[in-house]
Image 1 (cartoon, helix red, strand yellow):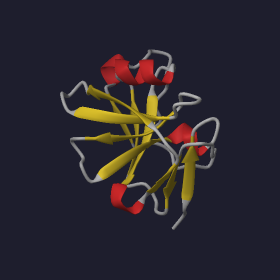
Image 2 (tube, one colour; image 1 turned 90 degrees about the vertical axis):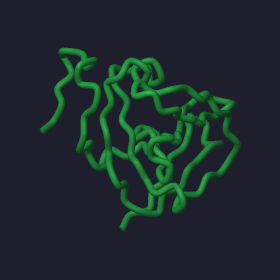
Image 3 (tube, one colour; image 1 turned 45 degrees about the vertical axis):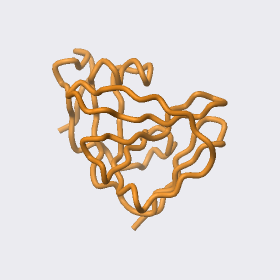
Image 4 (cartoon, one colour; image 1 turned 180 degrees about the vertical axis):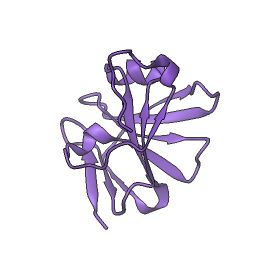
Length: 125
């Protein structure tokens, strides 16, 4: 089992994940595109009770495309969104895969909101 740490750009907000993700998902919804400034977002889902958060965060809450609220936690200094709590999965915390800064991180196993996928984005699998 691998333990990983995800952090914001300035390092003040971290989440320690002492287990493998239960799922890694690639999301093409418009809100993830806006949140990341990229044509998609990639989230790794972990058991929230097993993770440890270090540092202060600010929160932004919004409804997802499916209507379930999501609470995003980001650094108040550098603005990086590091993790979020999806209300439709109350036992989980989602972590932005890019915040691990680990090119060997497991690849996504699921792709959602494909109808919003940019035509030039190639989804593996």
